[in-house]
Image (cartoon, rainbow, N blue to C red):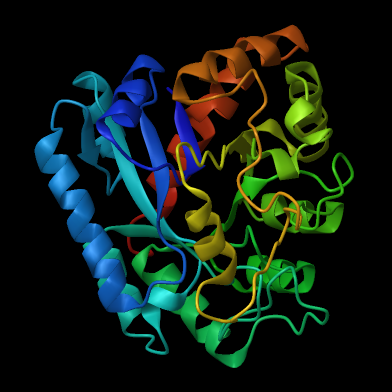
Length: 325
């Protein structure tokens, strides 16, 4: 089973066909960065049209069982998530509404301070806010997974401790392997995984050691070391693939509406757009390279199967439905 914990491609028939060529059974796709509730509903509508246009390639995913159905019919199950709590605006009642519409992940922050928590680019991390504590309870209740991929350290550790259900960092890497601001320190990864949460490894070059020149061996050796440290059962892939996106999308991701200026984020003023992907992972047809690379660094078949999708499948099965009373 092959599951990718995060993508934000420029979706098209070409990409959908590449998903099938690569044997990808399920993906978590970003459906909102800074969109408000109404704008996010329009993005759900856009995906409904794609499901109607390409029923032989993709199917809407809501539960882990949808992955089984997709696999049986040679399709890819698409699960939705938000990289910012903007779609719930300042209304806790919208948490249940967006889950009903099909959202299954929501980041509490995207780099900046939000109403819920602190983002990783802020100078001061004040942790989970008063509203954040209430939203975590509501997300737990309905089955909307807490994602802390772009959150600061204290906020992430507090979220893992406050949440009654496991949380996720869907797309990042260990900070001690590549000290990008968005990558996660030991205490953060430990807090998430020790509470049963998932950590998805990112292939976005700004998160990689040696950036676009990162080798497959380096990436897979990092995964093997992380498995030794935190347990292989809590790890998966969250590629953060942004295939075919124009640079205007990078600006929307980093800036939204919060500034009149340009925030270069993890890019640079001289090259603010998307970096080149490493040559061993250009698109969804290249997941087999990672599988081969994991075997080459000594991981056994069960471990490889878990990282490539089995661990995400179990996490989806346990966390997308209402909390048991």
